[in-house]
Length: 114
Length: 111
Image (tube, rainbow over all chains, first blue to last red; front, top):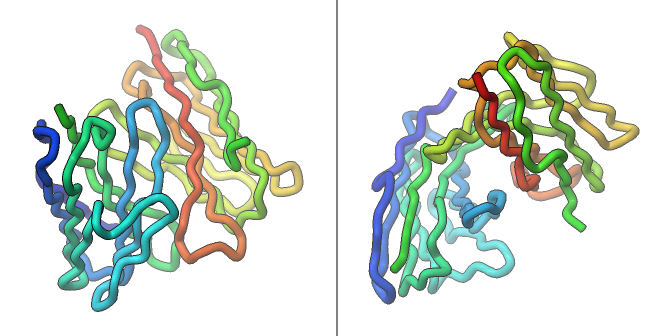
């Protein structure tokens, strides 16, 4: 199994500012996923982060708004840039289990933008 | 129409009741996941299914590939089962490890 931690667990931010969310995994993984869960909605994949290469963004998400770093096989960051109230969501990082048998999720970062 | 549909959206039960949550999907899949999300936001993977049935404690998950349908059952429900239950599928031939999520079922078990 994989244990994932995220920082911060929650934050309240002002419009126009940026927040960087950290994701730490207790084992080396090739792929890490960043999801957004808007209030009352299900999870939406933002991007897939592979170590040593640019992140792959899903339709509707761009690097300028959600820059991602993946400096090594156990760590990634997601930045939410130039925030607006519409960015208020839970942001979760996730990694696949061995052989794709399961998927592990971090505890999430609850973001409120005023 | 969403590729993954869950029903019901909301469910209130009395402690001890047998609970069923349904998931239907419209794409070919290689696997289906049932996830549990507690109010704090953290998500736990309950089951990963590609066929048949799996059981873990009071939880049972079944899948019918031909009918593109899965069910999650909770026997002898307890207030601590209160959570959002999410069905997610990995589409067949899709990007490796990319999941498509249902909108979730909010379960409240009352004592």
